[in-house]
Length: 114
Image 1 (cartoon, rainbow, N blue to C red):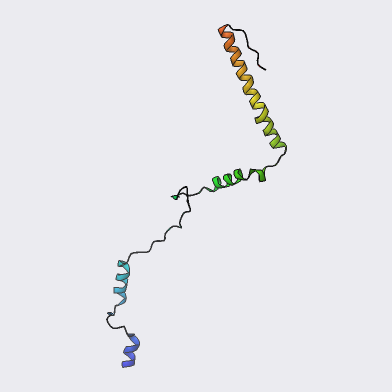
Image 2: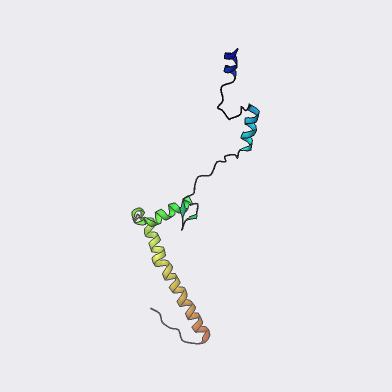
């Protein structure tokens, strides 16, 4: 009979009361629950919590390393011709036209530019 009782009830250390499954469940419910924390964000901008934007970071990388990515081809030649020659020339011609119109309205003689 003693072997039967020792098998059903394992020995407990002195001073700790034997608790049943229901009391263990109640104790578990009273303990604070562990909530999964989000991963830490990388800190930038003077240790402010900032979430980096992937698209912006890729653009910044491309911009910082332009000399490695630049290729001189027809497309870049067209962009240089358009924004380096045509747009400034168009702005110049519009400015001269406007100044000539003002001179005509004021009754002054037209000035010559370049």
